[in-house]
Length: 296
Image (cartoon, rainbow, N blue to C red; front, side, top):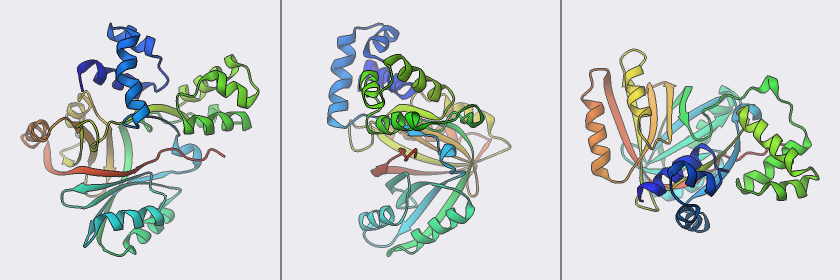
């Protein structure tokens, strides 16, 4: 991936509806240069523009990262877990565990039921999990929604549901299905995104395309780990960073173009006095990355 493509994808991760013209203006290039790089990736599915409602809006208050050790066919177990749970993220991993998941639950009772369902899957021999305390960086969870400032009506819901099918659905098409004017639809979308209720962003590329490898990190740190957090946040490409409660203090997902580049970053982390342990894994096959949820 060349630097223009990488920077264009980074901008789409900030705003999945940003126009090619605006991307070109920010990067000092032409609209054609952006279109020839991004459109084929969207058409092939290598890059996806997804829209998601913040889980808090759906009453999902407990978010957790789950790791599963498997004996036998990992792919079969991953499929079984997909059938048994509503996990928003499921990946086969290379490392101390074989499967990684992200699960969103209404409360700890529901989380416990989800963990029990995973443990009941044939071939599962161990399950470990940490609960999110604070989301520090994420495509869909960065902004805590200002729920008190927003009441969704049926037209907002219709807009959300259409955007979950295609995050770049033109405003004119949203206007046609809702009966609203284009300006009113635009205003509603901007209001929901500004309040953190709706997030529209690019997902990908992932480990099975474009040569990009997503690595996971689980760290324990000294104190609040502020300097470690700053180091990870400084990464130009960062999928995910959360402060957690459990066996890790921090969990991150960071894409790299090569194992060597990841090893260099890992060496930097392990050499720090404020990092007491580092666990790593590689996302070898992402089975599900579905942050869309019904808004109604």
